[in-house]
Amino acid sequence: MKNNKTKKILSVSWSILSYVLIAALLLLTLYPAAAKIFFKAKHPTVLGFSTAVVISGSMEEEISVNDVVVIHRQKSYEKGDIISFHSGGNLITHRIIDTTDEGFITKGDANNTPDSDIVKYDEIEGRVICIIPKVGGAIQFFSTPLGMMMLFLIGAALLLLPAKTKKSSDGGGECGEEN
Image 1 (cartoon, rainbow, N blue to C red):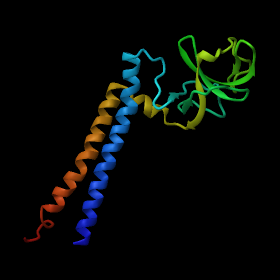
Image 2 (image 1 turned 90 degrees about the vertical axis):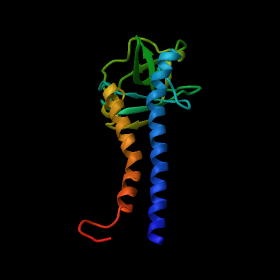
Image 3 (image 1 turned 180 degrees about the vertical axis):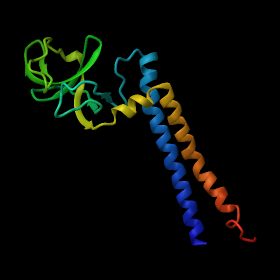
Image 4 (image 1 turned 135 degrees about the horizontal axis):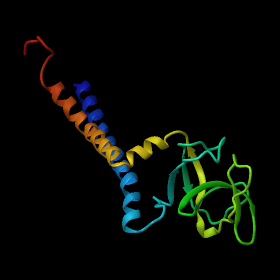
């Protein structure tokens, strides 16, 4: 009796966790795409945070290709901060090496020279507050139509798994066992 109650609690917990996980993944995947289309947002944020996948090695050793940077807008920035900013239609992540009256001088850690353009405050998306190593490839894949379909199928499987497990455990004994 106690074992069945434990199984039921675990099954309900698994279902709730699955729903929450799928809802969060859908929000994080669909909202930025919708915000770009409907609100013309260059780089949409969720609760003030945004992410970007690094595609160049200009910030090696600290940030590598396919790392994900979590960005948060700040009221002010200072020398030494790693920031993500818009330049020529791209989002660049470099370190502030100096400040001027016009803005910030930036440089990639692996680059020999500073960036040629001064970064103005309104071009800054935010300061890098977290680096998640090596998950960028997966995020880029799940942003494609095929990846979204795979994410949907995985989510459906997670939702159906507890129901299927319950049916098979309610279905009687094992092979060859008489009821």
